[in-house]
Length: 330
Image (cartoon, rainbow, N blue to C red; front, side):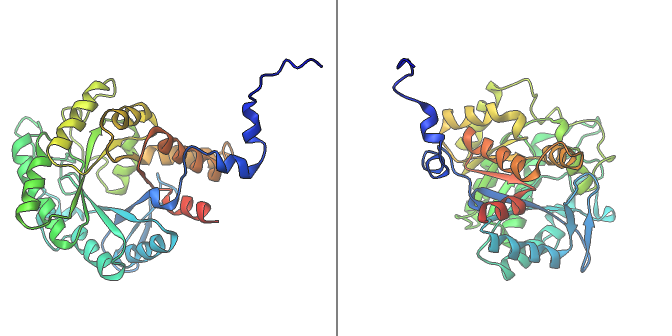
């Protein structure tokens, strides 16, 4: 055989496991994961969510148990979302401002029991409103920006007072990051972070989440007047630039896998901590494929999470966090 092969064979470094690990360009660890959890009222309550197989709503004692589990697995942060009782939902979402609401009680319970774990809290009115929108609506059903932003500031302060480590506004109102940052500084919450849902798209992938917080069927109209059009990429850069200028410590792209191009663009343009939310519809697709015998859960979970790291993510919010951490720790 003639020596016609190239001097460099790229397969050489792939030949053995030790070499593949040595040459890996990206590494995934439990420290890259944020675990979203759903909180509900009661004691000893676990409510499985049918459209999110393997995910449940937990009462406060269950949430504390999940916090201990996360700490043991090396997961650094939890993201909390409340299932507000229907009798506490109003047009103005005022339960969001109640210092003893479900979210605040969950924050306090976690920080008392597992103080070393980070708590990230959602700032938006949709879990608290009768109409399912993230903000206040006028007579025509339009979500009004400025009065909503004022309410979000109070919601953020309420959560910070309860012990939240990371305020995560998911509402997509203009200007709310600057207002929240100023309010946090004024009250002395200098080390409370803001992770801005900077590029949150009006997506078809959110359906199971709405089941989890019991807003499916409540929504009047849609969210396209404030969440982003999935046709747009340059607009995402403008949104990120605004949130960073207003004081965001990190930014998020949501959903995840359908928007890897946006994640890469944000990371390349801004060089800031960039997170992705692998949303409920993405999780459900994996679980449905596994149930149908069409996929290996372990391999698919790790491959999709590595895709986020490869695209430039500092971390990922994923319902597979605990499962992935166990695999990575094995």
